[in-house]
Image (cartoon, rainbow over all chains, first blue to last red; front, side):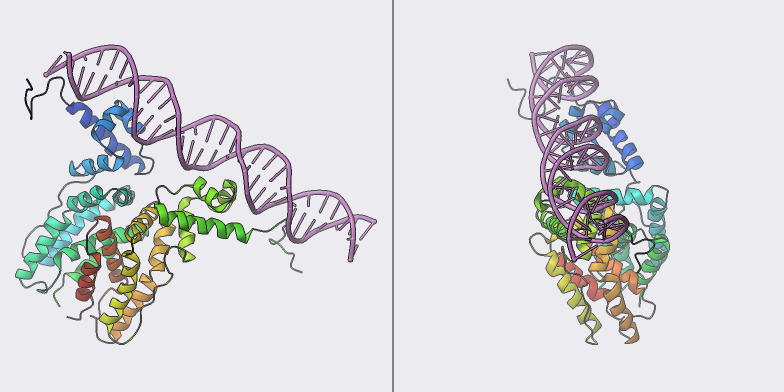
Length: 194
Length: 194
DNA sequence: TTGAGCATACGCGACGTCTCGTCTAGAGAC
DNA sequence: GTCTCTAGACGAGACGTCGCGTATGCTCAA
């Protein structure tokens, strides 16, 4: 009777191999061709998997991308911000690692694709911001900077994090050259106690 | 006389009525249903126009949106920034009119759609930024603020404009509530001489 | 024996190209 | 001036292709 309410189920269990093949294929195709041009059928073929196996576990392309993000399959997860006591230097360190991704051959295209995905799927936006550590690490580092007297006491740290991320996005959407230089200048300005 | 070099062409000239019907239909459908769900066939039907007439003049959906933007058919063109001498107040005035659009029922969806369009078509990004007056008016008002001693002399005004726009986008992509409040706080912080 | 997984067929909607037939406006002959 | 002639814009819609999301077998491991 009712091998009960919760756990017990008979029959095969979800295949980790299939899940992995699907996410790996998604990441590979996404990086190769961008969000548009990314098709479920393409993923299924690339992963050697039936379409239904994808539809069974993910409701949308966006969800697939979101899971790739949290798995660190598109960009490294959880960019850290060091704490040396020097706020500007620490933030520039973080910025450097983010820009390192962005400036790879496919980096800019990758970001635009992620933005595109985020626009149609809220989950992706959150996971993108989380992946880069904007809220968790950057904002917290800024907060610590306030305690150290290196940043104005009323600085809205979380918003500043979003402003930096947002600037990266805007520069990237408008295809500016030298995103890196601009971002460094912005951060220098924002993070300098005045 | 000047039936000259290039100009010589016989036959009917481009129909202004068709152009207008197409752009109007595009704007109408875009605002009603967003960028995804916007189809060329739908536009053609809505405008009472052949598909080919669209393909003849515009290479992509994005180009269509870009032109709607420059025509002010999606959001008002060229948000102005007043000059009263009080920098913070003037910028908040500008911000207010931008947020007024953004906070209409479809405003948030509209912005996300524009971002999505910008991600796949560089033109749209530029025109969006231009429409909101970020570079032309906001940045220049900030520059004037420097002259008035209300903003640090080394403030990167253009970047600050992008930062504000970027923050709007990030807040909107992650579906934050109270975008308006957050933005006002950010602007208050950025534009306060310290 | 149940349910995950692969494979495939299906109807649908949109794509972008192409070809009709219609019309319009400038060019050249008279 | 008037009258063809012709290039090209236009509406309409057929065409083949692609990807969608669903449905249906069949196999195989728990």
